[in-house]
Every structure is written in C-alpha cells, then in structure tokens.
Length: 123
Image 1 (cartoon, one colour):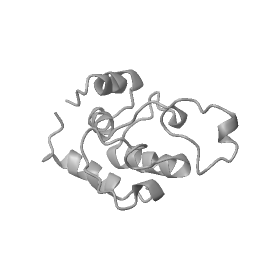
Image 2 (cartoon, one colour; image 1 turned 90 degrees about the vertical axis):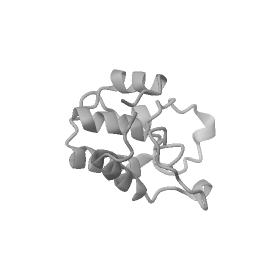
Image 3 (tube, one colour; image 1 turned 30 degrees about the vertical axis):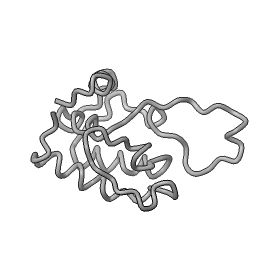
Image 4 (cartoon, one colour; image 1 turned 180 degrees about the vertical axis):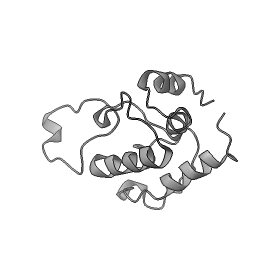
C-alpha cells in the first residue's frame, strides 16, 4: 500500500491539496487524501484545471506521458447548457494512488494503472 509517510506521497498530497476547482458541490467538504481519492469526484477537476494539474504533476514527478490522454479521465471545462442533448463519453477513474504509481514508475501506463485501480492495489 502507498506509505503515507513516504516523501513521494507527501509531495503528491501537497500538490493535490492545492487544487482550487472544487466547485459548489464540494463547499464545506473536508477532503481526506488517500490512494482512493478521485481527482474528478472528490477534487472536482475538469477541463483546463485538470490539464494544468496533470501538467504540474508530470513536471514535478518527471512522469512521461506514455499513453495518457486527458479526455480518458476528465470532462470538459465548465457547464455545457447543451449537455443534456448529448451523452458525454464516459471517463475512466483517476485516483491519487494511480498518480503515485505513475510517479514511482516515471511513465503513464493506462493498462497497469487501471489494473491497480480495479484491484485497489497501489503497491
């Protein structure tokens, strides 16, 4: 399991705690940063904010892009008044545990990260 005492984990939580795109549904909600913390559901990341966060993440932890694509994980920026007319492409989950594994390995490997998520195995 992700060692809460590791320097890598502390730096990752520090980065995540700087997210300021939480939106109205997160007002007053205390975030507990665990390997299961979801960047979309728990932190409210979407669009440009998600892009900026992931750029900072990749730069800070020297993670190669690999097969990462923002649209696999994050929805578009803001509210779309026409969104009820079309179905948005489902996004895959993205958690702090997955970021931890990518930072540790130095590359984004969607298949391995998705397997870790499915098995809740962030070792």
